[in-house]
Length: 180
Length: 192
Image (cartoon, rainbow over all chains, first blue to last red):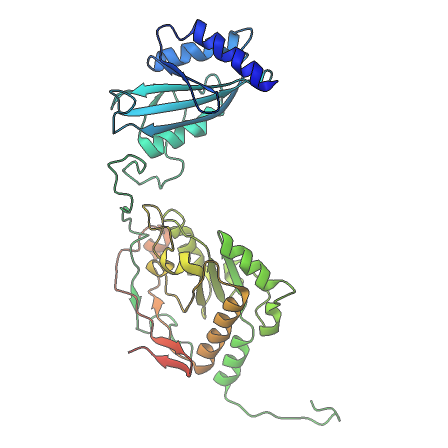
């Protein structure tokens, strides 16, 4: 039943939105729609929400990947937005190709849940989300400089801070070091 | 007091009595961040029963414990927190690094994980394993009791100055940590 609804939604997407956008299906028959830039992604989401058959109302996930090998075209990052309808159980995967310093539009005005997800993407890839209310690191240390999931980042490279560099061990009896 | 009511005197030196008391009442401070924490709980519960060795009174306040058991991966962001707990513990204090992650970083040789807690604090006993079985932790505690019994001097990190204590982010000096003793089959020997 859900499969049939999904197939019907795929047809709607193909007919309504895929005329000037890339559209494909993945191995399990879920649709991948490529938005033409950040503004278009926001426009598409609003369309999905208002659409009588799609009724998209839930942000399932928001993540990104590094497109260094240019497999998905001329662009540095791909932001992946997983959408779900809690009424029709339709899933849509929206992808946005971004240039190296291009800013993504925030989704926090539509779904407050996007707040932390966007912070994580910013932390790991350095993608700026325009209009985000609190765009700062969520997982890494606040003093960290790099963006570790970028492909050029050496994955073993730790940034030395004064408190995670090695401590001073002394054999002196300063304080009460001996337990005699 | 003996059974018949007559008084009984056990002559000893005060530091021997203190050592005896310390080694048999090692109150642990658990710092479990991952799967090693589960094994730590298992060790403390009734099947393995750490109370047999006097180390069952888990204190969740660093002011009341003697032995910090670090069980799990410590990230660089968590490092200052752990170090603060260590600094808040009262002397005498001992540290057990339980499991591969807290001993050496384990499989997490990445941008965000401390490669062993000995980067930020002196460690007395390392317990290998991923995670170690409860017998491993009990073994470590028994070895720690031997260490305490012999009264071996312990590497301690220098106490922070007032300014350093205010700003816990300032442990700048570095001298490579080297344990002063090694625990072998035949007992505890100085590390040469």
